[in-house]
Length: 334
Image (cartoon, rainbow, N blue to C red):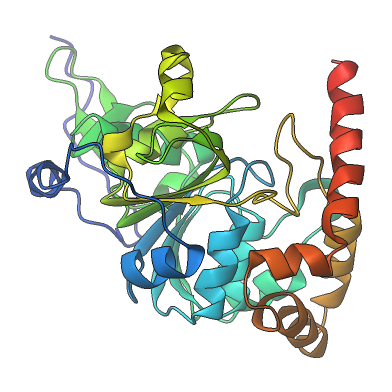
């Protein structure tokens, strides 16, 4: 055996979630495998399944297929001291940081709105020091979800080695028992609550995603202690069974299902509607100041009772049809 190294290196930052796979396996074992109706409301899902101090992980990719209705309700219910996986996370991490819901975050990509610029409000929140941060790469967080979905406490990889990101993470190095080579040991990431938006689901929680990147959602669903699903539409169980290969999240992972048409707005839902660039422009302009931030949140989150009222406020069905037509045009060119 080639003993390259036996020295253990450790990242300097805090590990925010427990990694004991047996403890999590015991929790998962208690989840019912019965086919029962899990349909509920956004308000009930948030009030009953998300508690102060919980660690959250949000599905989707950037501004694509994000569960906006649940995020708004978390802010509206003023959940506190939440942790979060900042994995390809933009509007979701912005909302929770800006509103004061977060006190810790595993970050790989936050604050930046790609070509749209940066969120001044999220930047203020993270720079305030009120949110503890531990650094990872997007790949590292994806591998951490994978490790959790496989029932492991960590996974060996070669990413992060030799980087400052490793130093600012909570990873460690391990020595391979076969070759003596050094690997980065990434701790499994078991969220208290996962939140994912999908194209369709049945009342039991079987979920299908038609188009667009899956990112780590299949792993996230299997790693989360509790899982909330929002869906563009509820469909009969028979429709799910007729196309079983399209079911990427099985019912036994899911704790709550909520039908929320246009539920990714202002984000994109592949095949359904395009990004609302007008809204993002308005938002990024508004959050440049504390006064503008308060006005936006008062109008679009605190000032509406639910997501249906929010959709009416941003232009209703007419606006969503405009975004749908743009999406159809783009799909026809690809």
